[in-house]
Amino acid sequence: MNPIRQAHLRLVSEGEREGEMNIGMIVYSRTGHTLSVAMKLKEKLSIAGHMVTLEQLETAGPVSLSATSAELETMPAIDTYEALVFGCPVQGGVPAPPMVSYLEQVASLEGKKVACLVTGFFPAGWGRNQTVAQMREICESRGATVCGAGSVGWFSLRRKRQISEVVDSLSALF
Ligand SMILES: Cc1cc2nc3c(=O)[nH]c(=O)nc-3n(C[C@H](O)[C@H](O)[C@H](O)COP(=O)(O)O)c2cc1C
Image (cartoon, rainbow, N blue to C red; front, top):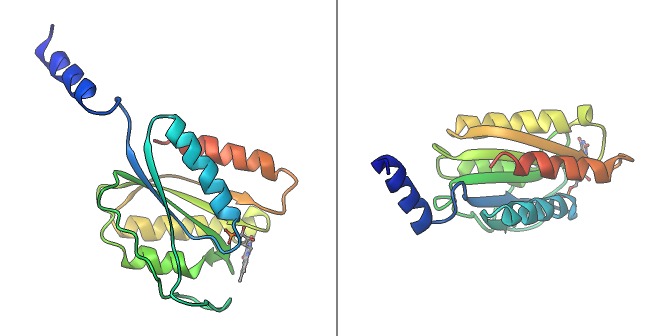
């Protein structure tokens, strides 16, 4: 057998299945919407054979609805993850303050494959698109390769379908 192919097969059999990744999901959710979508995504990624850890961002105290940043109780480390999913709600057309604070403070995202997940209440043009764009921009400015993003509008009659489309499209990225 070709020695390169032989070495490749040995690596695959010694390690995890080919294509399996260690994925960290860092989620902020005030009322549970984003968390519920994130949990569905986690399940789908796990079924696909990835090792997935979901960590929720906790704030150090109550955050006022008009805040633009938030002090975090937890600062989940990302160094062990090869890929990351960042999830949060829209707040006032931008990512929720705890997620902004986290992304600005977390260690470099250099070399990490990242996907963003957003939920909002209104149609996509009323904050969700802007929030996705802003998360993408912050992640890229920290060195990440953003490979995709998706959002769900909670008020939509198509919410269930949107959730499964987002879960399908984001899980297919890894
Ligand atoms: C202060 C505040 C501002 C919000 N601004 C927006 C907005 O600009 N656009 C939008 O679609 N939803 C907005 N929402 C609604 C939330 O984004 C939406 O309910 C989201 O799904 C909540 O997610 P969570 O349960 O994970 O916290 C806002 C909610 C709050 C509390």
